[in-house]
Amino acid sequence: MGYGLEVKGGNGQTLFNTDEGGIFLDMVATSAQTYTNNTTVSYNDGDMVFARPSISSSINHLSAYDDSSNNYVRFYGSGTYILLKATNTLSGSVPAAGDYGLIIYDGTGYQQSDILFSTSRTKNKAINIQTVYDAGSRSGSLANSNSLIASNNSGLYVTVHGSIASSATPVSFTRANYIFYNNHGTYGSQIRFNSYISGSFINGTLFFSNEQSILVASVRG
Image 1 (cartoon, rainbow, N blue to C red):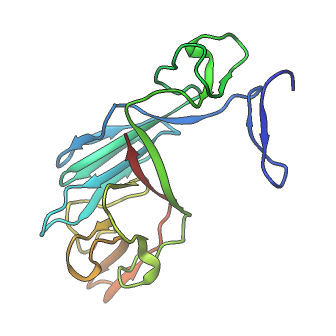
Image 2 (image 1 turned 90 degrees about the horizontal axis):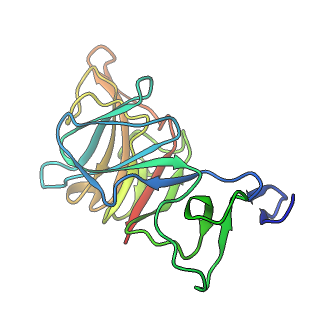
């Protein structure tokens, strides 16, 4: 490489290279947005949608339908969501020259639009990824300890990609995929994954593990 910065991991893999640029996930809005029943949110390939339901004594689960073929999520019930867009430059302003910090440019110039990364970049809100659960790692049965996503739901959002619920409440004869935010009952304030088919035609309930990765995040700022 020419002049620039290249960061490698312990086993030699390249983590960041200014010659190649990088891909970041940037919040589209300056804060979480409200959704109501049947709200749809469009996204592009590479984008991510996080959500958190409104929690009451009778409503405690995040229910959504992710139509990945048509790139939109339909929400059921109410709550808030965050849309993260894939980009190779992060938004937000950078203080004037002379401030301490690290700024990495893309090699084409030294304008705000040429910045790949900056430790001094300012932005009203940011996302902190707390945990990532790989596909197949979470049990669809709430009673299984492997269904646990977080021990306390306070302020946490989860990705809704792969969700295929068809209403705001579990429905027999239909594949359901829910994230339970419990503020009461058996699981206290935990968040748990739940995915199943139930009905007389199978004489019981079949549980499924998560088909896509589940990311848990909080909003900073």
